[in-house]
Image 1: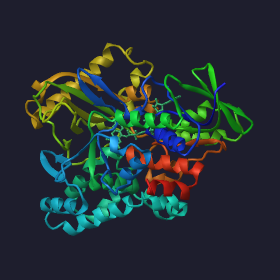
Image 2: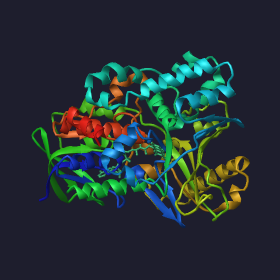
Image 3: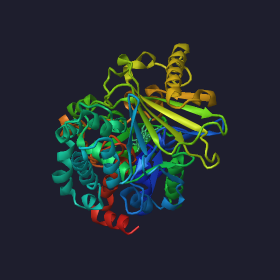
Length: 497
Ligand SMILES: Cc1cc2nc3c(=O)[nH]c(=O)nc-3n(C[C@H](O)[C@H](O)[C@H](O)COP(=O)(O)OP(=O)(O)OC[C@H]3O[C@@H](n4cnc5c(N)ncnc54)[C@H](O)[C@@H]3O)c2cc1C
């Protein structure tokens, strides 16, 4: 029977970053992935020559000296990434009921650009943006090194509402809506989005915004090459079906209900509810604790529409477009019933299409109840009614886009769609949620799960623990790995990379 020091369940960003860190630091690691393709939400797929991303469209803080740049440098893959920096003077365009506003890169530029649209609000914009920066700067190596800083400096911002913070800082509702114009990246819901989540994501994109040329799968591929170069093992088609316990500890992971792989430690990059369900009966984890985790709400999902475009017919646009059919960017579970669109539209950069785009993507919030009637179905076998549902949604979206990007309809040669059902079946996320457990500001202490669990050799990582997205998942992975290496040691290694 194979035996490893650390077994990692799931090859999403969180799992791969943990595996690479621990392998680099000398541990014998093994990553187990249920799918054929590694990467979870990092996955890109090819269709008619176009490369579509499934879960990373743009990320922030990649300029030299910024935190993700430092993390990728430590991963040993920074110089191999194919990156495209978005337009400085408007990386995000917020279009509220036909009127456009720009989010510009770098803090002073952001303030100045928005102040042009909101003369008289300059001081308020400055206060808001510098608060985002203060909170965003807490994602630092110093906070990683110093655990007590997390509870004193970070935790309080998890307990404040992002929307209330904006209300306190400006009475101009339109300005608030423009600043909250990228809220779908943060979870989208006014009633639970924490100031910490909102600020770290928005601040990170203000620092610098980038896309991955030819798709985000490159991150998974590069991390896997590094894990293997450091003696680690990655296995696909290896679904963990049970965690075998002896007394208080896990001794082995059972994969595909047949094979057992022994390990000293286990890191889960999958939903905590799922991993606790896999544990053999143990007295350490009480039923009440599992019920509490199961009762935590998960974020909304997305309907994604990936358009394949005719060669040289539609320009590559080096910015993202957020379109709102009402003067309110926040979403709720009644999103579909209201019938007012809130979408993110972007084109994908590819190394061989020059000034033109081969692929464009639309993300629209979608809640589980919209697809629940097909919950008993699996990929490719959901029936005609599901196909019609997707087709109708796709065609309405294309019609909607045509008014902002005339000619796009003509440029489309093919398209594909996904719904929360796709994500439920592909990454195993609960109810197809895009970002996992909501870190609800009303309930921060309950929603924020620590990396350590009550099983002494089981750790959790990934988007369910702290903030979701590239930055949040990287940060959590560092916290998880610090449990093995020690914070002082790991912080020094990252700083000196
Ligand atoms: C549509 C969409 C768009 C997004 N856009 C952005 C963006 O532009 N920028 C950004 O920063 N973030 C974005 N995000 C969020 C980001 O993609 C995620 O927060 C992040 O990638 C999650 O990583 P993870 O490692 O926590 O989980 P996942 O990527 O979900 O990985 C979990 C892995 O575990 C595997 N697994 C599950 N069960 C088992 C099992 N039993 N055995 C073995 N393996 C198992 C899954 O197959 C998967 O590979 C987006 C998310 C979505 C859904």
